[in-house]
Length: 353
Image 1: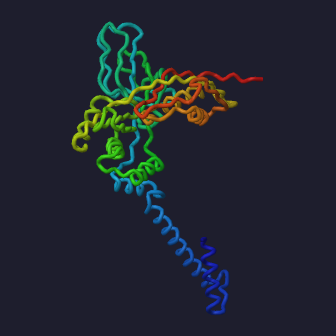
Image 2 (image 1 turned 120 degrees about the vertical axis):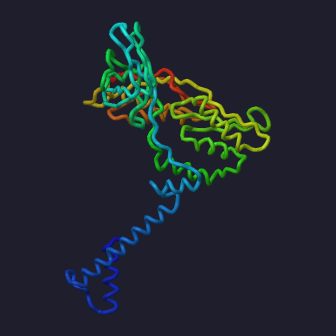
Image 3 (image 1 turned 90 degrees about the vertical axis):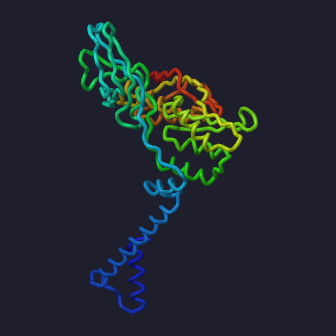
């Protein structure tokens, strides 16, 4: 219902009750229209309140409140992580100090910082150190060899690069993704003994990107909880933390084991045609970054579909066409398998005619 419809109804009722017709520019008409506008605002407010009352339609901070009632929290954005390599033109004469917080960049000005102090030893030409993206999000997922500039070069250091890709960067959980998790808690009620109990318990840890529960993998009375992180395989510290968590909450006489997934390497080879006027090399670089970002810990137990890979490629700005040579068919994954990217090849697509 619009403001004009409300006003028309009020004017018609006024004419019915009094036999008078409000003049279009008269004082009474102005007053009636002002009241109609206020009534319309109340309708809008009531509609908004109704949407926020239910997790199926709530959004933003109000969806967060529904999640909290179910013991869930929106997942924050995650920084991509990897390794930076610092090099000199010739063997260093003395030890060169590279402090934590040293910033390196890609050509697109995506910034990365070292996480710890490192020393390039005298007589050596290179040193490597763990690093992460300065800003969280998928923009920090960088292909190998794309980080080439230093904001401020440490004394004696000539250049930097990343020998392997930076991975694991994720955007903040969207409303729709959080909504799915909230609604799932109603559809699969955890009861302290079922798979939903173990899965939702594992997913309560912000470091966990996906979790699978295997019932009776080692016989009656056994449960395996398989988890992955945004970057892929979890470290021993996280597994120990989860093991302690479930040891305190498991059913009596149930043997719970928390473990990393089995890694399933998948090679990908694609050809890409750039749109007219687009920089082909830049387009292929963006396609490579998008495909690398697709292979993260959320793929645990999920099949790798050629259609999904195609959607990722075609969604990259500047792509006019593409073809996928490898994999030649969809790749199935078991519940405890994590598909990871093996060899990635992105070439220029030959245009016929």
